[in-house]
Image (cartoon, rainbow, N blue to C red; front, side, top):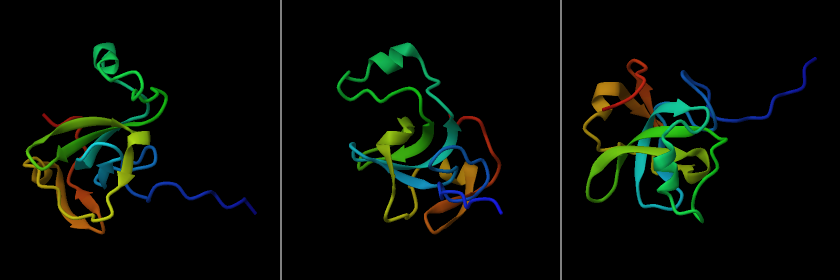
Length: 122
């Protein structure tokens, strides 16, 4: 009989890392939240972007990085965030980003139903 596996992220399509496509999350430090629309298994942006992060706050590259349709009190945008800087959003309510309806259907228990997997939002 195989040993039971340790629980990780919720099961679902397009899963990689601790969080999943469609999940509503918050940034651990900065005041924004968003819905995940893509995942890179490791850092996949530019070195220029990497170096623009203050050294004392720079996350390691060897972890999943998530693409979010993000919102804060003032605006909406696309964010690229390391796994270590994300936490599940305890509210789990709708994310008021204009592209959410293009990529996702209904929101249930803090996770949007994916319409079709797309590689990047623009």
